[in-house]
Image (cartoon, rainbow over the protein chains, first blue to last red):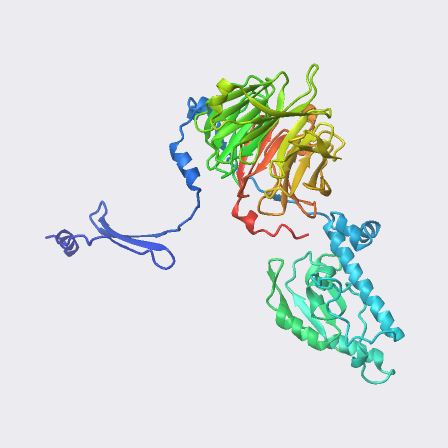
Length: 283
Length: 329
């Protein structure tokens, strides 16, 4: 007496194999049934992803490829000659990291924008543009202080010809506090400044290690005048710890920067930007 | 990238050249061979046999039907690209060096070296509709341009075939009037010879390469030097990317000093410079001797280098070359 399983196998026909797809993701599913050596029915599911690669070829080039016959040495060439071979290893297009110029070298080099532009050094071009914008802003503030021109509502966000580059605030540079924001008398000003600094401080984390204060000035400069930028560094190794504080002069700028840059991809990392927690009161 | 290594030459390469569609590659070298390759898989499509001297330069017609080669055996030859058959032979008393079809390919300019009593010259010929007809009629020389000393290394037809640009061994680039034969304009661009001169796609500027370790981007009309690319070693060839602001430079330690130099210190890499900022941003290793000629494919998706050791390397860029932001400082 055979087991019921054997009976079932002998009596039952194998189900037909089915092929479905490709579905939306391009996956083709093929289901097959077969008997193994023991005579058991096995189900085999094969999933294959089908990718279409489109390559455009010139019609004349295709005709050439089909019609031309090898001639000269190529006609008598044997595979063993290995005239053409593909390298076994990947050859990388190796990226070259240029060392950043030091401030002294920059100062030694092209000093004005025109001569920097004529040269080839990118950092000199960008650097001198930055210097030029800074100089211009200082001149304007000096004139405003002398009362020669109307004081601007606030330090301009963009100036200089074209305005194609974001005005980079000097890292850790001084931004003029607008008289409008001056609260209270002269007496408590230092305290007020300290308080405001804490209030308008933005904390950025998940920065890559090679981010400098200049980079952050580039990134946050467009949102408004910055009072101070501080990149946290390891006390011993001097390496960046991956977070920084940016003190805006205006609180609304800080809020705007947070709304725009939180979750922003920078240097392949997603930034996390938030208001900094107020510093605990010192005793 | 996994480049194809094409070993069809036994001696140093002189020039590597794509056709208009970029499906064919022509290489010529000091072993008097000219090879034709399919660029998609690097398979040799043919060889043009016949020269018995170093082949300096080649040029391909726009329809890829005909090839012009200039060689040190004092001849320049027209070949059928499809069959490899020699159609016509220009015979000179001097070695031929540079050759170039005019736009429309009704004419060809071939430069010959100073030799014995003759001075360097650029010879302009009319090409018959069927070059084989010239076997009866003989070459139809229109004008010979002579004057300055020094070998003429590269030629380009500009200004609607009215003028020719020549680069020469004395570091000068000159503009010739093809009709009158006069030099209209000249500029001393390099201290040493100009070994290569390649046009941009639109013809508004060209790039020169010189063993004086610089390569220069020059305005075609004014000969004003727009940019200068500096290398630590002599430069033999330079090409402009047709799609990006990239410049490809090939060269390396002088061939005579190669045996005494470590491969690493020889600067034998194919070097990529930013066209505007003139910074080297990437390089590709592979050759173990100076690169003599470089070229971008017309669609900018591959590049080829031919070197002193006789190898040609055909690289198809990986996808990340097109997506990487190379401009970042």
